[in-house]
Length: 321
Image (cartoon, rainbow, N blue to C red; front, side, top):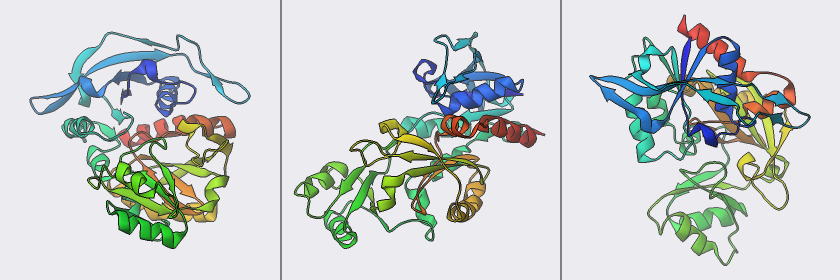
């Protein structure tokens, strides 16, 4: 098969951590051709999506005791050719958030890939529909108490009722802009003013879950089925467990409650063409549904001696038949 990955500049990727690299590596090991491109290198001609596609070869990472090790020259790129994306068997949209206007424009370009010829992961319409914070609100039996608002008084009343809360920008990533809130904080009003851009942009506020100190579980779902999990534990004085802000990755198993949550979200994910997804669970509550460029494969692979990338590629192979 021929597989294209729309990624951020490849020189910025960490081969020992990045899930896109893990999937590309698995694709190569299984004998598939791997091509890369960037969001800014796509277009539409005669109602067909095109891109500058570069063939890529890579040297697989090697596992050390607590990390993956890669060579400094871990990839080589061939000549970029301008060609229809539907010449690929599958296209993976793996540009990191935030979901900006240019990001949305790329999803419109991807709409012009013939889905009968090429699988797009994740579906562009699904990416537009699934804000990674707001999408979770439909699963009312899975989420903690949550409000979305620009209103300072509404947010204060909720936080005072709960005792404490966590504020999340709707377009954030990797823990960026997440703040711990207490009603008695003398900076409370200023925090809301800054986070909402003086009431112009809504934020999500959830009741603080004490179980967060024990970790934020990332569960990877493939076409709605859970295939692995990793627990991201806050370190030092940090209350966020995101790996991007220094969270420690620990081995984790799926509980009955985790599986219940997966069953609740699976029909919506399948409906919206969201094939590769990472959901976040804290203390038995669903907090986010990550669809743009979910990560976690490298950590799960290392801690469990598995290759989730292989499972993803095997699913793509079957879907292409």
